[in-house]
Length: 76
Image (cartoon, rainbow, N blue to C red; front, side, top):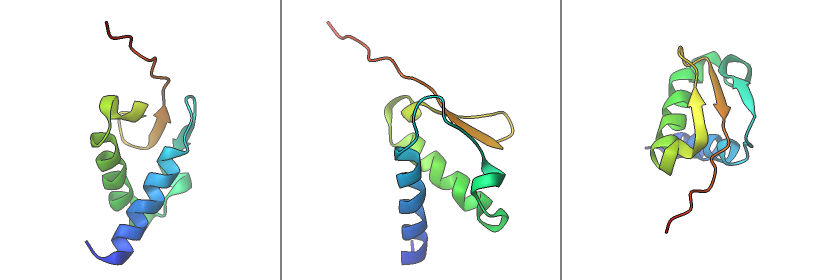
């Protein structure tokens, strides 16, 4: 991974970390068309790194992302 790609990934992850439950974004509105595949790959990597994918969900055609509330599970 080159430094430009690493920087881009960091920017995407910072954006995702700031999302709150109920936030919804159309990917075409927040990502340049040329970066679409890289943007989605960064999101998938972020989701894979967290339990329950961090509460982030894609719609069926990967054109939107939204954050859901993840209730804290009590472990006994």
